[in-house]
Image 1 (cartoon, rainbow over the protein chains, first blue to last red):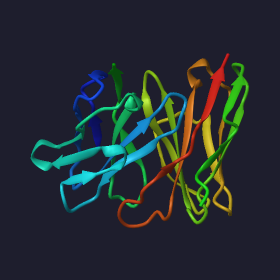
Image 2: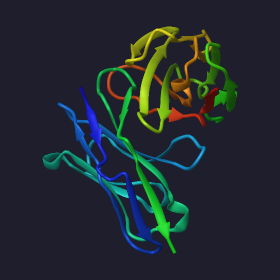
Image 3: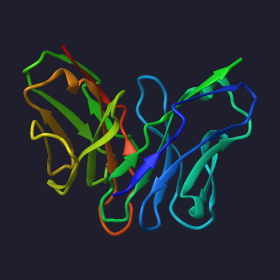
Length: 114
Length: 115
């Protein structure tokens, strides 16, 4: 069964500083990987996804993520954080099984300090 | 194109009652999945429906059930509510459940509070 680990529950970053959120997955085959963001009281918004091809993927709001098969990682990065980026971020893996089921990590809460 | 809609957005119930939540997928999407989000357990998969049939089910008790209608709209029902059922219930739709992964699009969720 697949699993996702986000080792950091909370991260605080100064506005304008760079950001990296960690995600490790466990899955036997090539995974479908996603990063979602959730603002308080809201649903999930897709930031970016990796299905195949180029291992560095670009997303919305200036985010990018790099798939590293050797490390089973899919870390999310942003070069300069804005106060509006404060939210909870979820990494997820989807299985190539004909279903659409996603397995989520526990999430990382990003706090942005002035 | 309209996104996934969920009704109601907020709901307050008491223990022992039952509740029905509704989800309307993106037009043309045939698969609907439900997830429960709680602070302690995070996001957990409940079930997936495709063409009115439950295709996949998560590890939840039988009090949690669902169905899908011919227009792909879906409902989930929770009977005999417990305090621990308080959660944000998210619905997601995808275009077609077939070979390979089908990207899911999430609705805003229904916030259920059980008193």
